[in-house]
Length: 264
Image 1 (tube, rainbow, N blue to C red):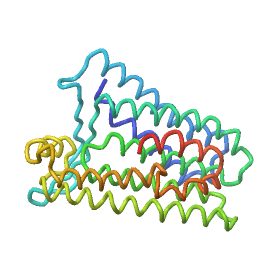
Image 2: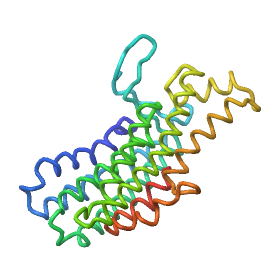
Image 3: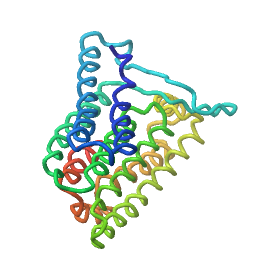
């Protein structure tokens, strides 16, 4: 059952692709079914994986699923791989569960909007990016998910782009959160250079063995990573984008506040 882990992010991504390429040709009922249904299936699979994880825990209470090696250049071999432990399982449940409820609510809320398909395409991509973020095995994949969340926030906050104020709000959110993302990227670079691996679990093991409890390098890396979380979760001093994020449709604000900020 745990081998189904890879399907959790895949279903929302498939929904995004269908909505992106066929959204203008399909009736709204089908669009709603694809948009909400893909996230609902992902939530159901998450429940099955959670049941298997709890009733028959994997060795070390963590499950590692390697799909393929993305690039192989000497020792630099980032993989498309997923890592599931208790924390990431809870976060995946929050993303898919809350995301599904918001998608269901959005069907009626956005029912008369002419950009119905575009809205659900962006929402599905949003859920996919968050799932990649919480299930990523290595820093490169994690950062792709992190930036995907930022991109989708920009697209959805400025969804009604014909209003100049909405475009301004989207740009503000994108730029302010990029400040935190840049700080976090520097932290990732520091970790990889100092510890020599992209794998999250490998980094934690090497940090414990090579850096002491009072290591200045560990403190610096932690502060740099904190910068990314500060930006994405709207904390001081990078909170200025958050009030303007309400410019998007109400379901977008719900997803940003209920799932994205919790994930960050």
